[in-house]
Image 1 (cartoon, protein in one colour):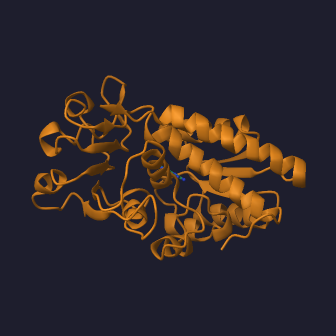
Image 2: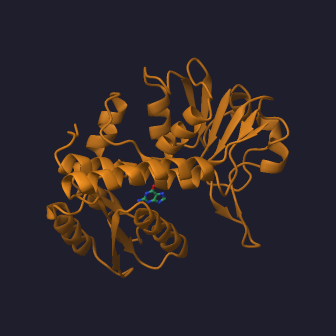
Length: 291
Ligand code: GUN
């Protein structure tokens, strides 16, 4: 049984990125810059944004944090996004979700310049992904795909069951894996809270990707022996410990490979954010063109 060590993989990817950041700066004078927008005081969001900033700095990128109070209005946020869109020294814009109630999340995300939308949440970027010609790939699904590729796990012809249909993970993951491309070519089923006979479907999976946001949701009886299980969940238990959407201790006994939480998908998600920001900067420096 293989433990899919996302922390180690992400260290490899981040050192590749750091090398490229240095090369780009020496060749063109451009330092990739990510602007992060954090609204309110949500403790988990503060930790996520902090981790993203630290990761930027460690790879030699610039990060700028814009903090707004929970009472900030949609108009105030739109004004900030407009300023960041116009600032040529900013290559990526990230608005940490969830936004406080009262902020119009769709209006705010739609206002981000699609070429700086390193989360790939803008409808233009989602449309490009769906047509198999992505500009940016969304960070968590892209991290999962890299985990599969770099761990030598074949997806072509395999039955992948994605548990969860969120716009951030489930839907784009399914869209990516169904493409006629290497690292994809899978037969994909998406199951969710309204699916009938969910266990019958998860038991048919060669690869299970679980992003449903419920601690230990996927139990051993829901998994075909020998399957690969990717756990996207980050849940806090009453004792303060972090746990995934998979009952790790029981499921690990029957699978061929499984990603842990923490130290699985999470670190790769941040690496992909850095990669998207780097690509945007390479484009701004005239080295490549974005679609
Ligand atoms: N909140 C949870 N996941 C994400 C993510 O990938 N990007 C942003 N911006 N916010 C999130």
